[in-house]
Each structure stands twice: as structure tokens, then as C-alpha cells.
Length: 383
Image (cartoon, rainbow, N blue to C red; front, side, top):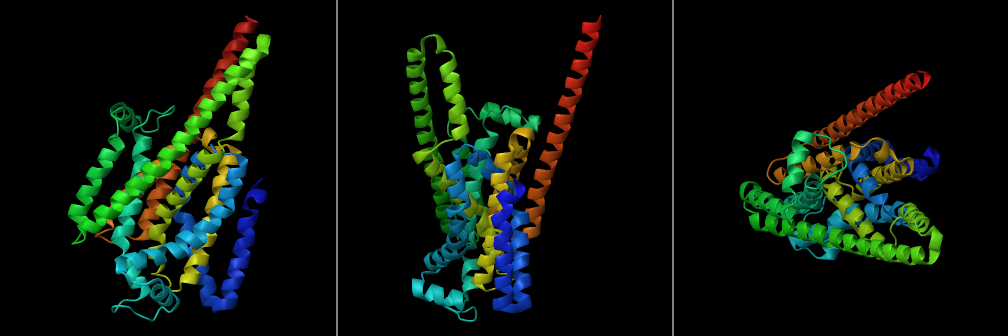
């Protein structure tokens, strides 16, 4: 399963590094390799959250995510989207933006493409920060089967019963960020943040609506089959529900979940794209390096789903969402203060490792208690 899942990632890595060596020599080879490692190290939490969504989708849509989704991630989010952002924020025509991107020494209004992209960072950070913050808030305010940091999650789940609390908290954070970190660009920060919030509410809301419609349709079919089954009426719904859970959501619900994953990937990649210009100004090296890393994140996501890792290590999803919450706050702070990517990466890895360790200890405690129960039953049987 491992090589079947990561096979394309390995193949693309080899092909990409060979192409980098041929096109740009040893220096380009090293730059692409560094960018690939950087992308992977910064996106472990992205893979875990992706897996929590992807496991709800059918195998067909999982393949779409791993194929077409990669093309969107590489060429759309890491190559085309930065061009659009620069064009919109700097009011530059498409032809001029492409020319600036292709020729790193050219300038427009005295700024290179990389400098224009850096200048657009407040809008990028506000959009991505709000989208990620909503993911974290919706997770932390909902009631969960398992609680990792109970002293935080238990009271927040209680107050989370208030309608639209996540959106209210996000708007407060956005307002404070625009006021304290706007640095003369408060309007831009507010507009971009609101767009990020609206995007989350629209894509996530539509996915939930269509998924709920599918569940209602399944329940209606279960009722009909139960009525026709006669003596098997108790068995038919159980079989139907089991098949539905294995198949996963399809159709419009899966499509909007797919869009949700793509926007999530974009929110994670924005900061990485901007930070990549500190390593190289060649947009093709950036797209290739970050694209290789994105491929591994997608393969890791599918691997986690197929192995059932999130079910075995129940706190892993918690750690990923806490990492997302931390990244959201870092993005908002980075509107004014520059924060090294290494800090972002280490915080995410720390949450993931801590939640993994907690999951392992929980599994050991359960295994020990089950062993003790089995011994007690054996002794009782002998007596």
C-alpha cells in the first residue's frame, strides 16, 4: 500500500529533480530540493485535516483529489494565483504581470514581481488567516467524541452551542488585526479577511447541505427497503448504511468538499509561496519545488485515509486543528511583523507530535485495561 500510494510522488520527485538539474544546473537542483522539503515540513497538519475530510468522500473523488487536485495545487495555487494577486493588488495588467514574473530583474513602479507579491502579503495573510481560523473555531466549538485538552475543549464545546459563534469570534479577530497590524492598510485587511470568511462559509456550507441531502435520501431508501423486506426489515437498513459509509459521499456534496480541500490547500500555500522568494526569484523553480512537496502531502493524505490512521490515533486530528489555529494567528500577526517559516513549521510539527504521543499513550492504557479485564474474566471462569 505504501509504494502504491506514494509511487507517483517518488516518480515526480525524480523527474522534477532531474529536470531542475538539466535546466538550472546544480544550484537549481538544490533550490528545488530545499523548496520541496520546506513545503512538506510546513504541511503535515494540512495532510491530517485533509484526511479528516477526504475519508468522507468516495474512492472516485479521492482519486480526483490526488490527480486533478494536484494540478490545481501546483499550477493554480502556486503559479497562477500569485499572478492574479499581484495583478489585482498592484493594478497591473496580465501581460505585464507575466513579464515581471518571467524576468526577475524587471520592475514596475520600481518593484520587481517578488516585491509586488511581498507587498500583497497583508491581503493574502488576511484571506488565508480567516479561512484557517474558521476551520479551527468550528472544530474547537463543536462537541467531539474524544477530547484531547479537556480543560480547554470541554468549556468551549459548551459555549459553542451559541449560533454563529465561530463567525463572531473570527470577525472580532479580524477587526483587531486590521486595527493593530493593518499598518495603514486596514481596509485591505478587512476586505480580504471578509472574503476569506465568506469563502469558508459558502464552500463548507454548500458541502454540508448537499451531504445532508444525500443522507436524507439514504434514510428514505432505508425506510422503503425496510418496508419491503418484511422479516429482514431490521437487517436491511444496517446493510445499507454500512455500504454508504464505505462508498463515501458523491456528486455535488463531494464536489464542494473537493473545493473546500483546494481552498484549504491554498490557505496553507500562500505564506509558503511568498516565503519561497527568499530562496529564489524564479517562479518555475518555486512552482516545481512546492509542487513536489504538495504531491507528497496529497499522497500522505490518501495514505492516512486508507490506513485508518485517524481512527487509530484519535487525538491526531485535534493536534492538526490546533496547528491550524496557530497558523491562522501567525498569518494575522505577519501582516505587520515578519515571522520566519521555521517557526510556523516547528509549531505545527510540535502539535502533531504531541497529539500523536497522547494517542499512543491512550491506546496503551486501553490495551492494558483490556488485558486486565481478560485476566479477571479468566480467573472468575476457573473459580
